[in-house]
Length: 109
Image 1 (cartoon, one colour):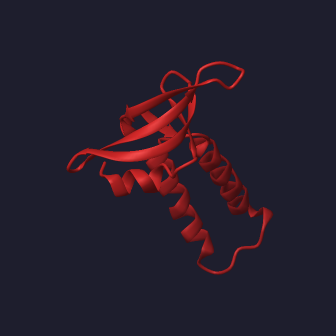
Image 2: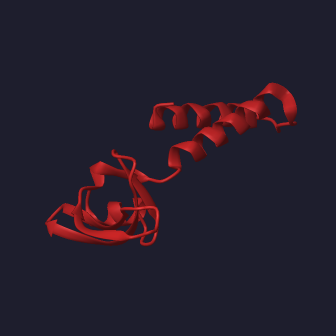
């Protein structure tokens, strides 16, 4: 990922998680070599909100906190719309089905 892509996916101040179920706050972004960027994160290390600074985390090792859960909620809501709990205008049903398929594919749900 380049610097622009990282800044869009992980805005400053956003919360992220890693594979070890730790959470942290994005403090900054930096380019290490042309075309490669790293993320600076303050990781929470205990329940009393003590933080540990990490200046070179790879964007492949983290993900935005709550992103997948939010997508699951949206897919569930869209599915209930398709089951007839709401009236959809002409053509909206196909668009909704397509949006659900895209989200499910993108997030592996």
